[in-house]
Amino acid sequence: MRNREVVELFSRVADMLAIRGDQIHRILAYRKAAESIEALGRDINVVYDEGKLTDIPGIGETLAAKIEEMLTTGRLEFYEKLAREIPPGLVDMLRVEGLGPKRVKQVYDKLGITTLDELTAAAREGKLRDLPGMGAKSEAKILAGIDALARHGDARLSIGVAWPIAQMMLDELARVDGVVAAAVGGSLRRMRETIGDIDLLVAAASPDAVMDRLATLDNVESVAGRGPTKTNVVLLNGLGVDLRVLPPERWGTLLNYFTGSQAHNIRLREMALKKGLSLNEHAFTPLDGGAEILCATEEEVYARLGLPLIPPCLREDRGEIEAALAGRLPALVTLDDIHYDLHMHTTWSDGTLSVLDMARAARDSGLRLVAITDHSVSLGVANGLSVERLRAQAAEVRAANEVLGPDFRVLHGTEMEIRADGTLDYPDDVLAELDFVIASLHTGLGQPREQVMTRILNAIHNPHVDMIAHPTGRLLPDRAGADLDMDVVFAAAVQTGTILEVNAHPARLDLRDTHVRRALEMGVRVAINTDAHRPEEFANRAYGVATAQRGWATAADVVNTWPADELLAFIRAKDERASRPA
Ligand code: DGT
Ligand code: CA
Ligand code: CA
Ligand code: ZN
Image 1: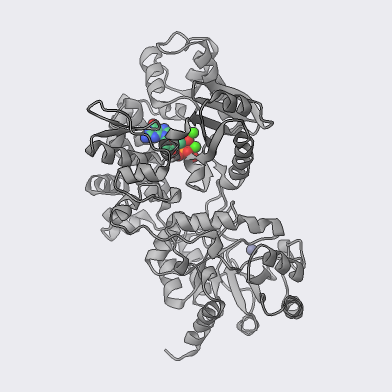
Image 2 (image 1 turned 135 degrees about the vertical axis):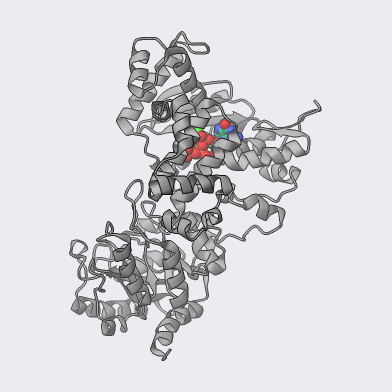
């Protein structure tokens, strides 16, 4: 079995346990294991051969034994046993929006429904409405969910699409009379790379006006549900939006609860229980029946638990609570720390502005230095530069530097193809003339691991290559990147002093959050760059910073925050080390 089959089986087990009504801890353990293996940059068979399965976050002895069974026998007895009790078709039914594990169990127990098709038929025939706790309304909702699934699939949406929509909706809601605060919650506030639905949170004394306004926003298609403090709507693009409104004195717990992640919340709730308190979106409540303790801010929620405020992007139960308890939360890199952008395109290849205009736009966005890095010759579709054109471009970069004066610096660079056969697109003597050399994989991403690893390592070991852009080449939501052994890539980057990029384009976010975390543990230096082809794309920098934050990056880890002479010295040092006899 390969990584993705192990991931698939573990997430199916988690879903089946949820349908069976198992303990949440057990369910989360399998989900977390699936997540960690999905983020694992290495072949799990190799990790197993090294005897290091339990080094994977979230994998203890029990799960390691299950992985061993899968890898050595190609089966998982526990899954097969579960499947005799919980038909696997029920797991597919969970993909229907509005259909949770409890309801799935109910339609199975009462009606013997075991597949999505049977469910669809039963709903159409009006057989669901008579189940306990259901009615014609909930039946219609399930049908709408089945419809939506057929229309849009259950693909998660890119943060780059969801974020601007959510901000626009928030602006509108914030203007409603009586609104004291409004914020996004959920995965969007945690800045996950993709999101399942938008969660909007509002503090207001009375919820009705806010919920009414939401229902009338231009991009809202229909209201899927409404309760005293919450409304769910579906947008024209099929995306779901959950709005919750509570009074301002409960804002802290509201924000905390609906920011999640669920795994993080469960840890907080356990800590509260140890102090004799229950915790939900409304308040802390003493278990012995005393008066509610309200929190108007999130700081108060964490303080009540003896913790400093934990930044939303860290709330994944990946060690942030332990770090907070130990006073070791990272001082995360911020957008304001970023002074340079080392990857962008101009009209010389497939960008929309000249060198000077792109540099000016970067300066206007608050930067002090950029590298102009157009595509190289073999990327013909992007009008890649021949050696002659690359040399001609140097004059234009010099001219731009003269116009912009001493307070802004333009480096002459390239985004050079690592060709499918492993060779580089420009010879070393040409690379030596450039200020900054990026090497990228755009083609042959589907090659076998050994072949694609040889290509990327060859580029990393070239003394002129300063940075690898978007290292895996994945494209969100669903084009997997190259099959790289990330630990080996990271080790080579550290050894050679090669920078690895966190590409800020929301379709890339590559390195991804978990890769950033691992890379930094191994000592890699990362850069956050926009890869802008148009000046509007400089705004994507925020997504890159968020991804680095989710990887626990501090400013010192990110070369775009360093003094310019340090960055330039770091770039030069690689060439010098290479030219010294070993
Ligand atoms: P998504 O929408 O799939 O990208 O991910 P989230 O994290 O936004 O999840 P969502 O929208 O289902 O719920 C928002 C937050 O609300 C979630 O992160 C934690 C909290 N929450 C929702 N349901 C539960 C629950 O059953 N238990 C706990 N502890 N928290 C929950
Ligand atoms: Ca959500
Ligand atoms: Ca939600
Ligand atoms: Zn590029």
